[in-house]
Length: 100
Image 1 (cartoon, rainbow, N blue to C red):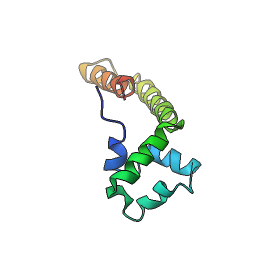
Image 2 (cartoon, rainbow, N blue to C red; image 1 turned 45 degrees about the vertical axis):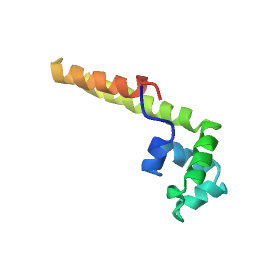
Image 3 (cartoon, helix red, strand yellow; image 1 turned 30 degrees about the horizontal axis):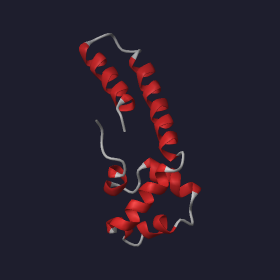
Image 4 (tube, helix red, strand yellow; image 1 turned 90 degrees about the horizontal axis):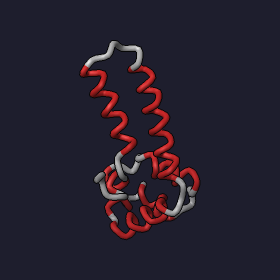
């Protein structure tokens, strides 16, 4: 299931995929427009989402998420087995295993 592509960017332009894209494409007009209120412009946002899809920004973001989850799972191993620990482990795995 998951959220529609671009949802996070529309809700929060500081989303990691947008940051990765902006770092690699600082002269992109749609990135520049975000600081000038371009977030509310559907044409700018549609082009930006399409541009991001064509790069490795989503893959990089997912790789980073997997790294954080692996660290979290290692940390949880330091706690006694419990329903709460199991729930946190399952949540962490769900976050990176869901379809985006």
